[in-house]
Image 1 (tube, rainbow, N blue to C red):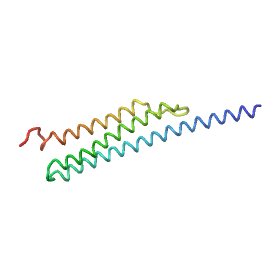
Image 2: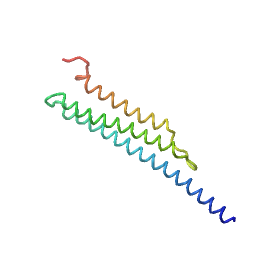
Image 3: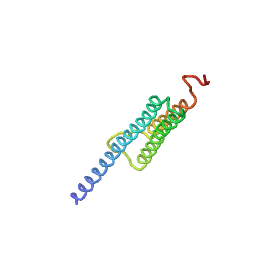
Image 4: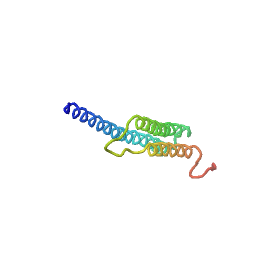
Length: 131
């Protein structure tokens, strides 16, 4: 009888530790998604900087906008997935990052990307007016 209790307790402990490992894997995955979002934003910014003198002039902005908005979408999707995973799992031995931290980072990256897109389309050589 004590072997069954010990066996059940060990199984429960292994399950708890597996849940902690899943949370840590989700955090690493979130970091990977955010890195990819920053890469997409960087590609858009670089495209705008390198090909700013494209003809027609709106084409470079449009292509850069697509990359930057893709980065914003990735950041929001990443935080939603991270929060959904945290809702399903419970940490046991470790302290998991809180859902508001994921949300703040995801929406912060998206807001920055949207401001960058606004800058692409509204600013002309550092001013809002046309020369």
